[in-house]
Length: 100
Image 1: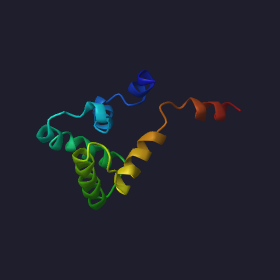
Image 2: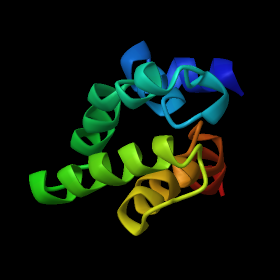
Image 3: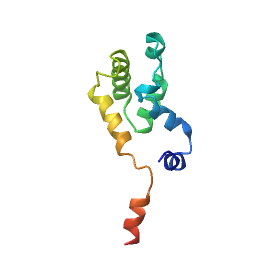
């Protein structure tokens, strides 16, 4: 599946940004975790066309998520995660539909 993602999104910036939401990638040190990857979350917000106001809310919720060790998930951050979850990793399904 990662190969499909890599082919669909040749820029690794997008994949690295998405990995910022992976709790296992977070630093153990609380200060390092607090400073971890905010720019990547901002990049995701931009890629999905979120307004600056919504992006600021997502960054705030991301900070709270990191502080709560992954337990406190805000609504706007959940929206971003949902967008990532439904992002197709390939166009095979669509192409099959066109073939019929």
